[in-house]
Length: 346
Ligand code: KG4
Ligand code: ZN
View 1 (cartoon, protein in one colour):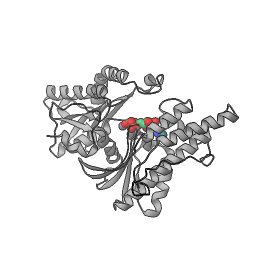
View 2: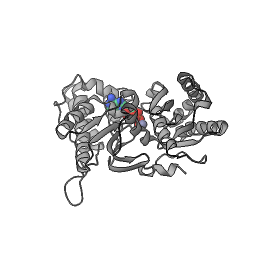
View 3: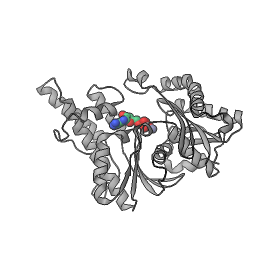
View 4: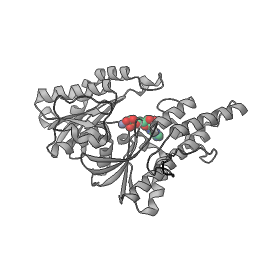
């Protein structure tokens, strides 16, 4: 299998990794979270400038840590979609330049395919078909993984992504950005049964609800109303109980849809990816719910759940082995459906 160096700059991590045969030779991640924290979210222009400052350092570190020279690298990859265009362009331009300079094939990688490949890194014997529950700051999708490059979205959020809901609820509670890890920590000290919060459902024209699509904006509004009501009685909010009740509602909603989808499509494995896969409530709920149905659930280690370049390199290495390469004119795209991954390769 190929040795690939990949660059990931789609949001607020400048990451470079070298992967060979689903094995990580190096995995460098420089997080910008501390810089964006004071704004309460990612500022796209600031993110792009930070990537420019860090990307060359991260490439040099990745080569050094892997004990590799350019002669050891078969292909050079970068995330090209979806993401913040200014941020994506930094990694993409660096990868294309290096590919030209060292005369290596260049591969653009779909960020969500990278998140799917995080499960191959942690479970190298994993084989498609399987279901991926992809839950990040920008996406909440149930993806039917058919083969490398071939995916079908079976369910998705109709409004906020799960990670976005965690970040917005954290802001309502005046907690730090990113909200997911903070709410997760607080939830472990609270009682999830304290408050009833409604799980968002998508009505179907013929009646009933969509079995796999989700909605989190109503839940966020319900938390806002709850906070306003509680504040009328006391200035001190039961933050841990609110966090636990909110987290349990999200975990239940995601679990219900993922299990129903896997069973309906006859898929026996659910691989979870994206930053929200780090959530302890989701891990507990999904793992427990899968047991009676004999479903295998894969949660990659936390460092592979949040954005990293090892998952991008792992996906690129498999495309390389199948003879796929991208044209050097490939652009950055803020949106691209995962069913369109093969459009990235000539
Ligand atoms: O996958 P990721 O690193 O970046 C995107 O591609 O979006 O996901 C970031 C998201 C943020 O919304 C963050 O709040 C959430 O993942 N997150 C979590 C946890 N750790 C990160 N959400 C819930 N629980 C966590 N432990
Ligand atoms: Zn991501």
